[in-house]
Amino acid sequence: MSTTEVLAAALLLAGGLFYLAGTVGLLRFPDVYSRLHALTKADNLGLLLVCSGLSLLAGSWRAAALLGTIWLLGLLAATVSAHLIARHARARHFNGGEQ
Amino acid sequence: MTDLAVDVLIGAGLLALAWQTIIGKSLFRGIVLFVVFGLTMALAWARMGAPDLALAEAAIGAGVTGALMLVAFRRLVRIRPEQSAQPALRRSRLALPVAVLAGSLVAVIGLAVVAVERDPAVAGQAVAQALTDSGLGNPITGVLLLYRNLDTLLEVAVLLAAFLAARTVFGEDEARSPTPSRREVPLVGALLAIIVPLTILIATHLLLAGSREPGGAFQAGAVLAASGVLLVLAGRLQPAAGLSSWPALGLTLGLMLFSLIGLAVMAFGAPLLALPGLWAVYLIETAMMLSIAMTLVLLFAGASGLRRGSP
Image 1 (tube, rainbow over the protein chains, first blue to last red):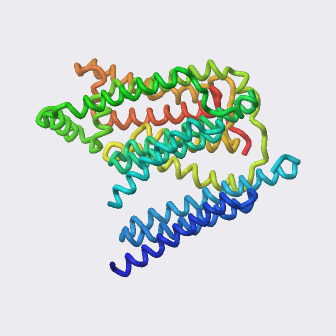
Image 2: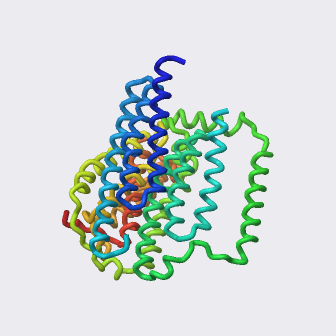
Image 3: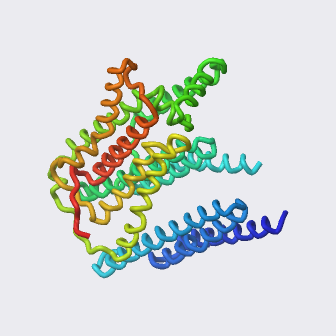
């Protein structure tokens, strides 16, 4: 195994760990806000680590740029949807609806 | 070994997801699982080396169908709250016979296909030669437009028929009731400003790439429809009653242009629907993309027209 492969494997494993932690958090945390907190870590950092690992393995700037774009788009979608879910939960909370 | 493990994981996941989608405790859960099923199915197609199908499954099967189901569920909650809380599955005495029948049909067809003796010298090479002559590098698009163009034309007609049928069901009252006005969230405007142009870019790429690489009018139309769905969700496009001119043109453009060119070639002695060249392919595919996108967005909006909403 070359150094690049070892580095890529480490990045992919670290990314997988973030996804695992995020999923456990989503299932175990008590309310909407802390679940979102767990989930967005997986979406942001987990995806970045996986994409970096894959770009190292792909070994071309084109693939790396594409994976980077995927990460940025994922980041954008995750940010806005987490924001909207939190906002909706908060509005329901203040309107006296159930949590 | 790893490949086999991944394939087994996807296959088993698909079966489990399909089962959970059907027996899910609530309708909403079933819809969400259906979307996950569609994405996993896209993964399976991609692994089987069918990127065209993977794209179509992800964009139409998971994306647009999921959005349509969710919006239908939202209406169901509003009209019949008690029904929306019921489980998705209705037990029926017909279920088992139908399942056995469908299963044996699949088995018989599968066995028949496996048993067919292929003669590689006949059809395959003729098709490959015709595709090279036509300049269409993507065999899927090529076969669809050169040999199955009547099918493709009728698929567009089916979409139009589906929209007309839906229109008679949802009626005009539904469209007139204004969507609940909500204050626009600051981030949503920023998201739209980035996503909508990007989606149009991707749809155009899929359309143009469709002649050489995976892609084509259906995938491009579904991706384009996604940006329309976003605009409707954000309130930038509001459902409007009555069929105004530009949505009507969008709805029928693909069918009209395809039929027109398909008929016009007969005047030059060519058979019906024999496309005269690559320019006609691009023209028809563009018109079909616009029609598919317009149909899907109008179905999502549940109206026969759209008007500009306040940002």
